[in-house]
Length: 440
Ligand code: FRU
Image (cartoon, rainbow, N blue to C red):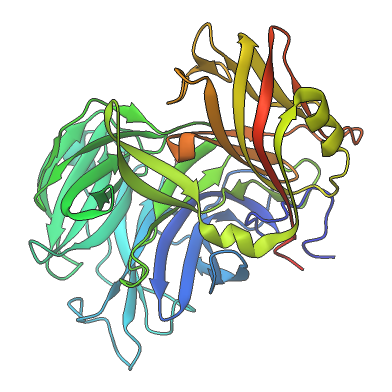
């Protein structure tokens, strides 16, 4: 039956049928989180893009609704974003509900143009604006790499802002009514799916910084005045692996105040009537580190609502931990652990024939990436891990860096195992939660 297939992710969103990629139009409105996404409703592969749609009241359990945007004479429906136009600056609001306005790219063989659509019924149906496209910059740039509008309300300048991938960078546009857009500036060096938001540093609202990122996980921290972004860092990176095109929610209630991100998980679901998935929502923060301010990404606390059975241990050696792992069952886990490298140089955590993490101190290297972590002097390493049927997310140092991996199909049930070919470890803290399915 629906959602009970062998390779159905248990606590990550996937569509009932068809292919999905980028999350689109992430917006909260009146008790509901909207997750739109790139969807091919007919096949397991990328083609024929629609905007799929799902809603949630808790960011965990999702109900899939009919597709929100379908291809038209301007092209197929590529990625974009959505806002709530509380003051009806667009004039699209008709009834009593505030209007949700989506910005998307229409892709045809000749062009990519930016369009808008609006909903007066809580996102259930959308009307495309009759004067679309609102931006056609194909001639100006001499390319059709022009896509993925991210729109948001910029409080300080009292304008709508759009960040748009154009050619080999990101452009910034401004608008009063969401219909007419004026080009303001351009920054080189990012590809696809721009995102731009402001966050307090170490939770201090008197010291806020802006973050600009593209689809692949590199980001800059800096200043944004509503028209141009001024970097204050070199290009940084907060994840590696199979995540792409992550977006954050617009309009999360002020009393919540979190910046919540969902990324596309480029994870195959072999043999299934659906393909690919969303990564688990994470909370984005800016924190001071020895190297300066960095962006952190950690699973949202709502994960705790899915804990079904909890195990916790302290001060285990490798063999004891491997023995304790045998009591676990199921295919979905949330793990927190603190590991100390006792002597030697490396350790590994395997799961069903997959190497979830492998740290090597010689190269200060985590899973083949130069990333040694913050506690290299004390040789103590902190990881949080989410394991689902076909994917694993590994968050190092409270989310300073994350890795997203596909998992090979389960062959035998040999579970988790710590290994260390050159040295040994002490598992100072180990907390494992079995996770219940969100589809139950
Ligand atoms: C990123 C992307 C976007 C585009 C969409 C099309 O994965 O290439 O730039 O809008 O996918 O599906």
